[in-house]
Image (cartoon, rainbow, N blue to C red):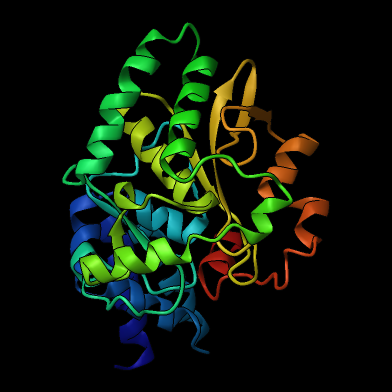
Length: 287
């Protein structure tokens, strides 16, 4: 199509999804609009590219998991949605059917499926709910859930030991069993920071515990797709430790939180062999 037509189509998409129209956004995702818009944002036609960037944001902001893919964040108080796919930020975003059709040998990080059809997730929710209900404070509830999630994903691992922590075999086995690189997060029995953060968020959503989810900016190297959950603790925000001291709530912006997040001075440790930004999502998020 001519540039004016592409620009007009992008403007129409943005208008359709304005205000968070989930139904329209879902249809557009199933039709491949996210991929088409992502491609258009990288073309030289500035008017069409800018309109495509606006439309892409409108589509993704209507769907929490797409918002995470685009902006690397789901704020506290927003659910992941049911069902949803948590797609790596440097992979193409698609609907559930598209993601499940990806073969098990697809390169890159796992696509994590959050669904009430995941029996292992449902069992963890049932196990967690009494702990959360009995907790005297929100902080105590978050800590209790963190310990359960850590235990379900392989237990605690030291900061230094995390460099050699490997869940590749478990991931590969589950990929083979389900026939896809898209897997139910509850069935993954060993996982790193990203899998744990997604599982924590999924269980918290179902147990009524408000929390947020963030994904780091590394897409390769040992810090690739590092992620963390956030909660309100005391008078401020805290990062939930799901790895090293499960249950610890690390005040946001503190050195302990930055160490856990692998940001600031901790982003340039020997673990960070490469620190690059996702091809489109981060640039759009900063636009």
